Length: 586
Image (cartoon, rainbow, N blue to C red):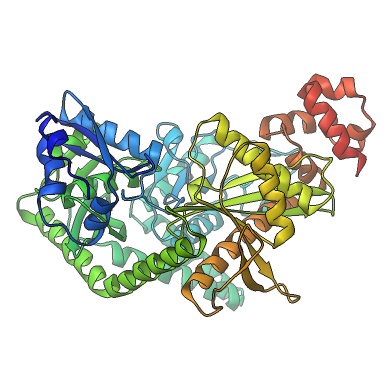
């Protein structure tokens, strides 16, 4: 560990953000402090253990930025974490936000599940979040069955099947009384706010009618619906005023692990809960604050936030621009204590497994780093491709940090029509990925994993060399049964890794994940049908241009017979040329 005594003496006792760097100049940790000098000294003048000790041993230098307030230092800290993705900061790996149920404010409303809710906050009715995704889907399906809302995305010229089975009022072909629609919306909103009376009465009536008609299968299905509603609401009941609508957060910390519990209270009901256990370093209050901010990045910040007294109330209030409350007594304090007990219980259940998983990942990472002679091994990028109809290729890239998937950084690639084989497709994807890395002056990965042996490794090295990049490359070689057999380094040497070792298991997971990702992209495009499939894989054609082409030409046959000038009018010359190339193979 370096001696920073002289440099520390020059650090001001002011608020700000600090950045720790390793010997390669890479930022490995970003923090904030009310007093920069005091915080930075604490890393080098006291005994540290666990993950903090690993960080301190990695530090080769540090920098800091002074701010005028602690809130500014928090905003700067979060900005730098997003930019540099430091090794030792908390990073939420799940790319999915919790879903909400959306009742649209249209003339003919629809009810559906949505995830990207920030842009819709003031436009439609939103209810959630729903940590239990299957419960949200079941609720939407049930309401859509009981209430004849619009089911199609766009109105058609004639009534569809939903109208004929009485699950739609026929908005496409009938004039609907606005009062009927408003009454439906009123009852649905009432149910989503926790009052089941209207919907349960409707289901009860439908169940009795089905029973009288001796349609016992339908009656049983409706009976199960009623039971689901009763169980759901029973689990939600807590003794609070119905006007309450807030999120409540508490946590339990032990051995550099945090168990964070979030209760979602909506209209006085416990709408759902979220728990996550993560490892952290530094001060626990900072780690929890950082987690809370990341958690709400993809969803809606709460109307009000209830927290324990040792968290930084003013900072969270300033950051979210929402009311933050520290309950001191009564029912809300009891609820905060309950969240703490739940956090502790989850920690007791999972800590041993988490510690084992962390230890196994660190050992596997160290083994691979040693095998390849690498100084740093944190980020791994892996590639695979798939094709449509034997012609149209697509590619996929997955990113793993410390052998954990970082799904926010996954990427899909449409590949040019000239590509007719797997190797050429892979070369194009590799080139595009790392040309963009160079143009954006982004940090390259510590390792590239190829799905194959010498041929794939050689192709990757050739592309990297043309870009003037030096990134270590390995290949996962399969046997004749298409099962991963061994590991090959960039010198085409077989590395001694046992098939039963944790390292082999982690590498196989990466290989399976990138294959799944590329295949899923391929299948999703294919599922849209031939017309959409072709348009989806043409570089330069996104959703807007696709809709314009479909509106103008209507079919592939008409597009194929159209001149370059006609296509150019819709998508421009360069994209029109690419589209013509793709259409030749149809």
